[in-house]
Image (cartoon, rainbow, N blue to C red; front, side):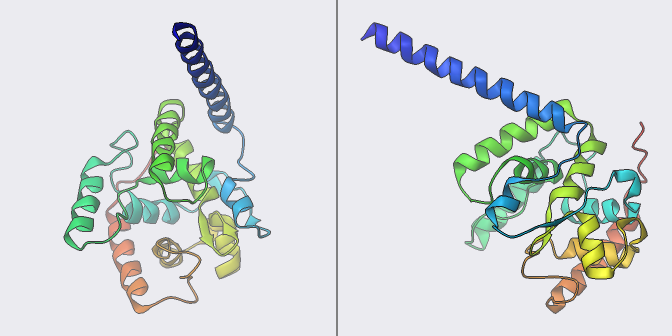
Length: 223
């Protein structure tokens, strides 16, 4: 029995070590290499529209709107906005609904980059792990760059460049504040809501995003 327990312990340590080293290599690789495909693209079984654009080619309107809508404290926290998470948890209990919201940009980036869109506590554990990894080995500029290039922004549409071309027939570098805010406002369900097809409350959210985006501190990614 002791030999079995020793073998089992060594096996677990070996598996954990291999997992950590392999994921570390991938995380370090994605620190500099453009991301061309993510698990959700394969999961959807549909030819994706996806064009990688470096952050220097993305209009600042886009990331100011993303900050305003998804994670105002992105530059202040280390991957987890615990105040926002608590607020989302309290609202889920108050209104007796599934826990939604609270995930910041780093968490969303990690989830979309490494995991499938299947809700479970196991996935949440891995999401937390990968969030810590990218926050440790990437800077905020890289997290934002990858995030804006891989998240789902429509049915088969991934990343802000593909979204800009699909919805407004222009590159992401030319998006206006109004257009950027509309794309971001559809994030709750981008396969259902689009800049061309959405309920009235998306337009209301767009107005709020535009307002808050104007209040976001101006970013200097080189610092």
